[in-house]
Length: 487
Image 1 (cartoon, one colour):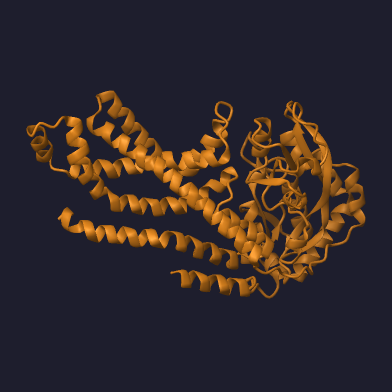
Image 2 (spheres, one colour):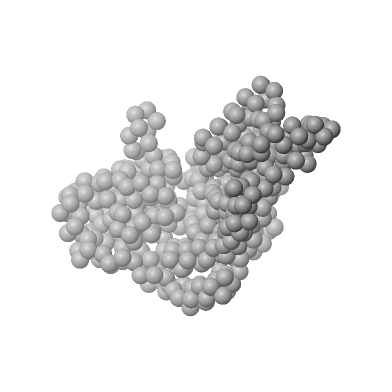
């Protein structure tokens, strides 16, 4: 098994990013023949980019209006395609839509994968801190501190480049400011558009400094030059006519930075592709260790909690049994992702758990419900006559349970528990939504660096296999050993 993983890692280190799927011969002709310009975005980005109007559910935002204006200039209509913001570039490469239009910053890493039009918005990176906290006035002053930002963004690059600063990556734009208010992190770096609407509206927070700047542009596949040229020309026409300014003013986004954009041409796309290196492998191994620790601790909670629940359900009073049944049905009947969100974000005003603790506790509580059913089945598999015989020999009910019933029940449940351990190992990938960097999160981070998903995906899969394969072998061995006893 170690040889297999080593071989996979060697191949990955030697390899580079996989080529994108062959595009249609003429993307612009395909858009016009279809009659729609498909543009990718993520509604989770919220106001003012792309979001659902709370009054009637319509899709609104300044980029919605911009997409409609560009499509009109091309003689077609705009069609929105929902995609996760972090996966917009690979989705464009797959051909899920024609362009990306969703606050996509022009960065060196992205230039190696997509072609950008001229920018349509200029922004500043803002450093936001607590009013009652230390007087941080720069990223340099935050060395050794935790700074929240959006994963995969230019702001994340700015934070990563600051010596000694510990970046905390989030999936959404409101969560980091909530964590800053509660003291879970020390500062937030995000675009001024986001900071103005989600951070600085909180009385407890203040603007400390501007720590960078950047631009948004429309992204097109680099092998679709005709479409790129048409969209860029349409955007230029919107700038020249003042329509872009009117859109930005309606959304209170126009400022002095936008004036200089009128003369900016399209950004080049000639950055060389990156390759997987030793630093990436080391980060993957660290993430794998994090995954294993979270899984082991969560399984310890699940095993102890599941056994307690099973015993109460077997021998407790009516109220206790009802409460346990409700617990099991609640945690088995709702997604673990939702439970993690509620535990980390929903309960934060009452109990502000750190991300690691919330991850372990959330997974442990969820899997305790499943373990309870395994242990209950094991307890019911022990013949009642054995308990009666133990009592006849003078044992108490507690002694009969500990010495006679539980050993047999645990022996029956053990293979299922081992299988759940493997499932928990894979479900630990969900904790990335509460800022924990485990294997899957590290894969998405590395995919941005390498500008491709195949190589980091294969490495991630190899490490998951290396962690889960011994457990799978153990489970099969236990099943074989316990089969005669079960018969």
